[in-house]
Image (cartoon, rainbow, N blue to C red; front, side):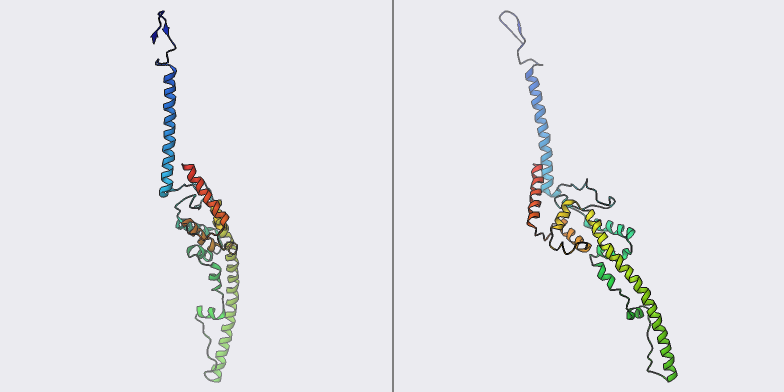
Length: 252
């Protein structure tokens, strides 16, 4: 405080302990502190992104089947465990699909299950070989022996024909099931993918010719999340680049 010439105290002095100057100083320090914290957070996020940590936006994404893992683009999550995804997918298929042993090969070996089923077409020769059945040579032996062989061969062929009808009925059921399961597996996998990953897949070469082909889909997703794609859609590529730029910019 300062004293005026007439002995009164000057109460407008801004240098007092509780005056406006101290309040402004406190607000300024608080603002600086907040800015420092924000800068620290941004810098940490930026270092994490550019060091390969990326941005994990899959944590809040739920797939069509919540018990199964989900997949996204490399922008959404830089590192993803495709092997873990396929193992969980296989367990789900084995538990919930009919004739699961046929469709399983699409997941475990990334092979066409329909071709695998058609290899089991129950021909007469295959049934005889699998059951160790052999027709006797009716040209060898006496007349009586030849006649006996012919009778046994006729009986054997009737038995094989009966077996073939039963096997063919089961074969048709398997083929119908695997065709249906192909579409079901496609839908299941797509349902575990983010919209961004679905758009990337749809932009891949060969998509239109492979709709409902889960082998192509799994192969493509494996390449996409690994960063190896054959993407040729220029519009999608531009979108993907802009999205990368936006994410990086938001971290600055």
